[in-house]
Image (cartoon, rainbow, N blue to C red; front, side):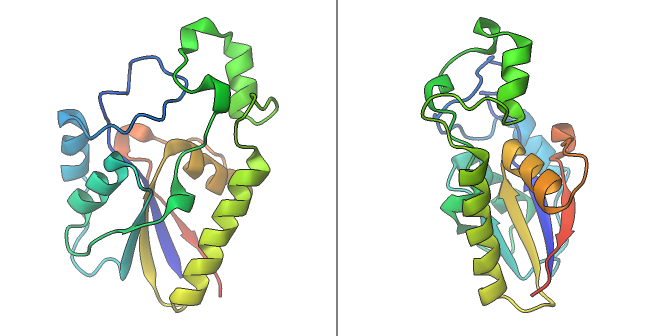
Length: 173
């Protein structure tokens, strides 16, 4: 089974300096343009999944308008607990790097194990509901994509968010 992962397009949240937020932003004009520059051909996918955030749903509908996306809560971004609604400027670069690399876990934040557990559940779900020839599109968040690349694919976990960070993963049943 082939899964294409895609980061959502830009929102007005980008560039505001938040570490994380639970606010649900729609795509801005730049994000819509990103999506329009990344439209997939018809019949590229058998199914489309996305997180429950507006920006992922909108991205999925623009880049692949041929199928209604299935919203799957396990694909949502990491809950950063006490760092939600806080600004990067108020913390050291080293601290933020340690949080991003899961060396430090802020109070009430999801741990790496929490996220891997919910991603494992998603992968088990798609294995049960799709055959080995399926081609899936998954629209999610930068942090989730970094985890998938690093811990599921053993690859460099950099994501090119300017180009919606697209990459493919093969899943065996």
